[in-house]
Image (tube, rainbow, N blue to C red; front, top):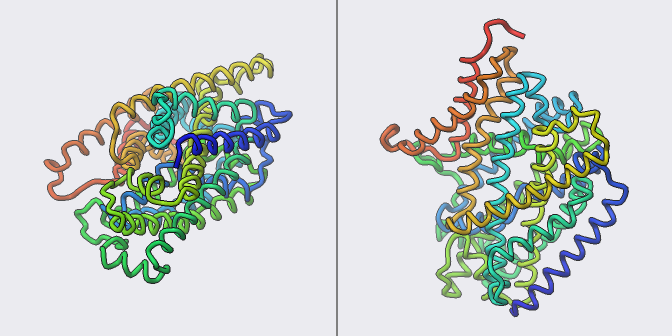
Length: 482
């Protein structure tokens, strides 16, 4: 497939997004940008959040990881279901009862201003690292498959993508993203189904025979029962639950879409619907991963991991499938990047600058500050993507889960402490607790072979981090209860 033709389809797709953004951002204001005027349709939010939750990393890394870990990732997905139920029944009622725009305002009212600023800072750090890792992976594929052949440097490709995202999120924010994410999720899922159908046809298989073939190759194993392994099913399910609780329920990007829905019950429907669809979609991604390994063996392709799917789709499938793959990949990219930039802008303006606590600021001044922050966040994204390009890690999903374990752990500890205890803390010491906990986790993770012998810590490092934070908060708690 000609790189010029692929680029033309990418430009056409962006123009479609721009048209949607123009239509939905009319008469927008700061409230539209931050929480969509609390008037979003819950069905649109649920469907659009699929794209945000999955991202380009899921699109490429999950299928690519089947060759090494089989369907082990589905153990984490089972945990996702538990996490979504906790979000729907515990966190959402809390957020709606307090009428929050930034969910970290809860920490301010419950624990204190330093706790609030610390929670917001950890979100900003975590979402910046996680979103730029996701962005890097897709930009790298677009660079290798299209723009490198046209002589465009990687840094220019990154700037082009970020400018495209800025153009359609600059005015409307969440109000626009609810609609663009729905469109992009549709394209992403279409690409997923098309690729599955094509490979089944090329291998002369149906679903039943494909599952049998995957079983014979050892690709379809889901549950791992060795307690010492990092893939042990109980550890993976528990980790999946807490990953969802933190990376969705305690994440401003995800929750600002959920609380943009007018009524609590509709927002809860959104989360439960999302959980069911996610289980089905990720299973299809894993199934596709198994098929890709079978098809790759048939085609004599040696690429593995994150490189397998792009290699097969762009060089060993018909041109129409290559086009659909690129559009689906971009559709997986934009929801995770546009929502992250918007959420980081919202969090910095509300949590760090205290925009809502400044009644002397006019609406026009707030808008100008918000737009400047938006541009700065995009510039920070550019820097981090270039850093990831220099590091060039072979599996970005592992990087993202590791980053989440270190940066979301303090959020887990803070919210849990606030919800299940009535204790007050010495607010000035909270930042030190939240820095110490991940530092200890780093030491444990680095030297786990010496400390734990054959027992391996994987994604449950997040839970350990949360427990250490919780324990630290107990240490700095005041003697009298609130």
